[in-house]
Length: 353
Ligand code: MRU
Image (tube, rainbow, N blue to C red; front, side, top):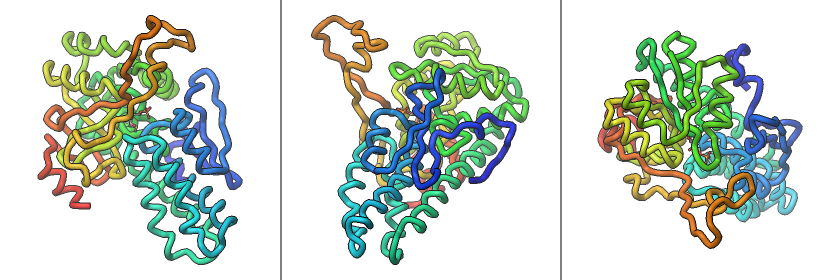
């Protein structure tokens, strides 16, 4: 894998790696206290790991899924040498259904499938090459987005980010955090605010940890403090990643992004969405058609395994929300940037799929 900057913490850990014929995932539920790597040799176990948030973040889920296809192909070839392309389908369906919102999951499976017909004999080596290319491509895309996004940032900028769109959420380096890393390296960042991101606390546990490791000045704030910070004039940019971007520029991202974006608009704070092309879904016309994952009620009725809500209380737990394109100032991808996104500008950059 390409190493970009050995001084950077993002090379000292990896959310997803392949080693000795196995997929290795950093258990993100345990961070930052413990860095525990888990080994996988079956695609359906990887599907469980995606569901259970061991690996999370749209591009990281895509990279993990690509390697999971290699594992599925190994099992299918063992079961049926002549017909592995069909024997693999059941496992790939399980994988594909593991989480609904991040399109990178099914994008990666589709990319892997493209080479199935041309493979003769044991598919493992050929598929591993494709998966490695997807992984390396994601890291390279993040560096390019970092460069493009940082060009939009003025000196002394104060930035708020939500959830974790960093090295942990991607093949490496990060999308939103890739821009922040590059901008910081270019001397443009005064301070970053990381909103905690209820209920999984990706901002508190992951983003603040990643930025702290890189010596980027960061303060943790609760999600509902962000509007007041904006009102006080303490924020210049809201910079976030995305799980899926529709053809009209509507953006799905971690729940809470929409309210941050509404506040940003009200207070004149600029909004940047940073995501690779694999997150753009030109088949979906608008955010209304993006499937939103609803997770279990216990994630919000309980705290640290202890029930805090009254007995019998029902809870609604959407994991993502939609930020309409008119609240977004710029979408940054490795293929270029879209200012004030709309369907026409999106089509001009990404074309029809
Ligand atoms: O539920 P998660 O942790 O998978 O949600 C992750 C996010 O919403 C990220 O902001 C998004 O995937 C972009 S990651 C580069």
